[in-house]
Image (cartoon, rainbow, N blue to C red; front, side, top):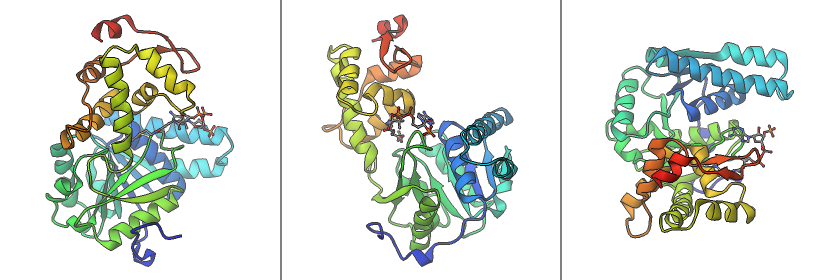
Length: 301
Ligand code: 3HC
């Protein structure tokens, strides 16, 4: 069945080489997916070699895990390792037909990345952003060919979560959109097409849940009451576990994006920012239950 809003699938272009800007948590997870599912060369880049190596180690670790679980055989494992490259030199993107960025969530940083990349890649190379909610038209505004920019938003953990939000802006053309849809399918994900609205579809809804959980804590309900209640309700993860999974800074940013767009509807938690600076919410036992608060975190609250 054709997903709602999807253009003619025959417009899609083949993806034969993938470039990834940023080698952090999300980028390395989807690098694994691209190399495994598309079986094409994948180049990871970052600002320094240490970050590149860390990203490569993480991808190699995930591929090793797949091999250990018998999901890929030894020959395929070796082939995939051979398809993977890491460098600080973005000129390696010159012959890519798909480049996706997952750098720091700051508009100016992403705009600069796209400006630089557009000087390197061919005019028809698709450019994608994994932003959690920054305005994609604002990114497109710095491009010579804004028609080739699309949102391609993964969810954590990338290997497990089935969804990708494909975000269409006013300038995204049908070839770009069709290629994004086909790429998502090749990655064995379910894609939905969303408009470029703050938080898109999923983060808009998640921001409500996470924001209300933080509001409850900020107005005096103990952390463990909120956390355990939703865990015991049977949610796959409690709101605070989810915040830890996506990263506290990313989580705080998602709340802020929605609050900035709709201040009367979304909560912004100063407390979450303080905790994000501190680095963690609380200590858990092996089963995910809170076993005790970090003393300093409790003091910060
Ligand atoms: N990283 C990688 N793989 C993981 C993982 C992680 N953090 N956690 C679990 N997995 C894998 C396991 O290895 C296992 O893989 P296998 O089947 O190949 O062995 C599989 O997931 C299932 O693991 P578990 O049996 O431990 O699974 P659980 O039942 O505990 O479920 C979960 C784990 C699927 C992560 C579940 O807790 C869940 O669905 N949580 C909600 C996650 C969610 O909502 N993510 C969206 C966050 S929002 C976001 O990312 C957007 C961004 O913009 C902020």
